[in-house]
Length: 470
Image (cartoon, rainbow, N blue to C red; front, side, top):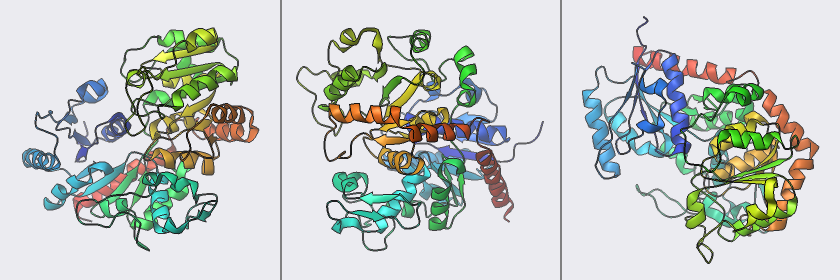
């Protein structure tokens, strides 16, 4: 048996949007005979890991600690772990949210690689928007973003919820935040300075110009190594629907996979409106009834996935729950009958997106959900809620042109029923949007992108050269 090339330690951010791509990256590295240690000091994530990882002799998961979750303790636990690793790691791959752990690796002389689990558009547009200093923009104004593809502009309406585009408040270390100084880089540029290179969960076919922008900006090697999806996502849709079932851990739901697929089988091709905001975010409390009214009025068949916490609690940062404490308008499922499928809890998203009946994805544009739909050729009604979702939506709408934004006035104005109805109809009837979505799907019909496979190999060559001292 061949000797493994090197030992790599990975520091993930816990949370499924970060952990799932990290799991897939581990799988790719193990296939290249690398030893991988996943550092998870405060959370027992073993139940989220597939047996193919846990059973590998070249994979190690550090045991969870019962300590409180504080940055200083993370670094101390990491130092303790590294003191016991023999031989020492050839490098560390660090989720960009966990950039403060790079101090430990720098002190010990271990090269660190930044891992961006979202797309390159997030990094590129955030810096470009920061660099043009748009604090003096006026209503109706749009400002081009130098170095980015045509059509990638910053509008005045983009700035109405400034926190999504311009970080506010103070950060540790005394660095300037708030209205950007002319020519100042976005904060993430400073945060990756200690890195030897960057890995980004994307590929040339999706974000080639944005990868090039980040590489030029940072003057570091930048590799697109994604989309990092489970192997089942690269199966043909027909094969998956015939033999496959959901690849994530099973969770509570009021419908089985077979019931969901059976319902989809009865719908017309490209007719179903699929609505899901993931497990961590959702629209504002007052927007849920608007969504329900839109689904009822549109007369289109739909699947609406509602998490339990959406039913009985408020979404952080999005206002209080309506009277009665429930988001879901009682009686909707009875009023629409068999035309609608309201799923409470877990939904088999891959199967839904793979089914030929699914015609549109009303999505928050989290990066995992975004690339899942792109791979399956499903166009978007983009409804971002926070963080990188705004950049992902901008990529989908303005660059890939495989969807439309939920409302021209959003996020400054709440989304109304008519916005949703019009948006759904536009996506379902716009031939250019649907054509572009299918063209994107064709790029992935051969499976995991060849450019990303080549990038992962180039990364391992890079680590080997560091190890030799080249």
